[in-house]
Length: 232
DNA sequence: CGCTTTTGACCCGCGC
DNA sequence: GCGCGGGTCAAAAGCG
Image (cartoon, rainbow, N blue to C red; front, side):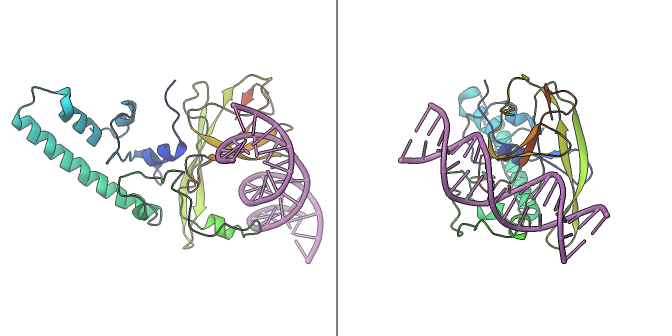
């Protein structure tokens, strides 16, 4: 099985533009070399890790010219990553710029314990929703049997404007006897709620990204009202 | 013992 | 203004 990846990482890799296909922004600066190769495909270009791995023993016959070319590419990719980091910082309200300089888009859970005081249970919804986030829900990525449906949603921003986001709906077939509503999609989710909705006798489970407390990616999982072996 | 899940209570948007 | 219903919180319970 591939190592479990989190939605936070996926969020760093791909997010949806206002009205077009997803833009891939996998920031590999400073990351160790043991990431799976598929990660590098995301950018469509060679990553720093690729370049570095090539320079670290995988091409023993490399000439000085080749090394210089790779260095130039490395510098170019680093510059691209810097620009992308700035872009993300702008989109996320400068959250990224305050994080560790090693290029990790999301703080590790162990270090992400915010010094901010714990929010009280009675805190207003404004304090939750006015933070800067991508507000993109991703469900059941790569589950294979699912049918994806993208829905554009206008997400209000704190400055009064709206940003068009994508909500992906995916259906997949699971064991009807399985009542856990846990869909193994390769990401780490933490269940934080379950409700019975009016239009469906099956309960709806709410999951949020378990990678970092600051990651606000969420997903909802509910059995189809028509076919209990299908979850949406 | 620490992390995750469960679940009842609460918050808030929306329609009437 | 009020009630409904979806979404979220957080204490308690469960689990490894």
